[in-house]
Amino acid sequence: MKVIAIANQKGGVGKTTTSVNLAAALAIRGHRTLLVDLDSQCNTTFTYLPPDLIKTTLANVLVGHDERLPLIDAIYETHIQNLDIAPSHIRLAMIERQVQIEDQYRLKDSLDSVSDYEFAIIDCPPSLGMTLTQALLASTHVIVPIAAQYYPLEGVIDLTSTINATKRPNPSLQILGYLMTQFDIRNSICSDALAKVQELFGNLVFDTVVRTNVKLQSAPAFRKSIYEHAPTSHGSADYEAFTDEALDRLNVSPTIKLVREA
Image (cartoon, rainbow, N blue to C red; front, side, top):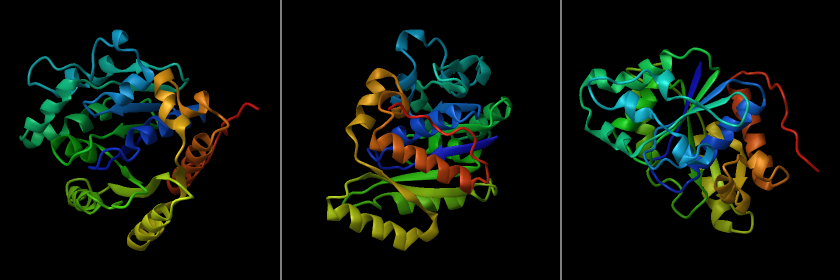
């Protein structure tokens, strides 16, 4: 199973949008995918699940010392074929109190216990801490969304250092790439931000940029991916192209292309 953490310690950069739509694109293409919401704000969870449906969450799996549940008990099917989700809970914030070395491997051990998935996509919290450490120790790859803003690299250098440090206990961890989001072609600041990111990270920057698109913001309110909510939108086209790139970098052959309605 390829485990991909979507991480950036800066909030508001499209981390959750990238998580939910990458996971949906993989599932629609026929890849059995688990979406893991590790952010206690629960935005990814509520994109696909109504709150009253949720009985067990990742908090029941990762928090506490006694009577923790196996991950399989906290996995729910979504309305998208091949896409399941492990929902978050505000109690996940308590992971930050875990300091024992063995505690940091709880997510990895949990993911190792479910072998039916080709991909696990982890939506990480917007911070550096024990929760992110658990995600990186469990992952094979990291994707870093970066908003095309005046300070695009705020926090990214620290995150990259954290990723490199995690390679010591997890040598298989790789940065799959840096994804520029919230890109407005009419704004020169966005072009400057992209140039700066490309200067620093070179070929690790995805060719695809995710353009600003109001449909990307409204899709979660309908509990839909961008492909269902606005299949002909720029947001749908951009995340489809990004998924193609990600699969190419992972040496996974594309299967089913997403079908857009006229």
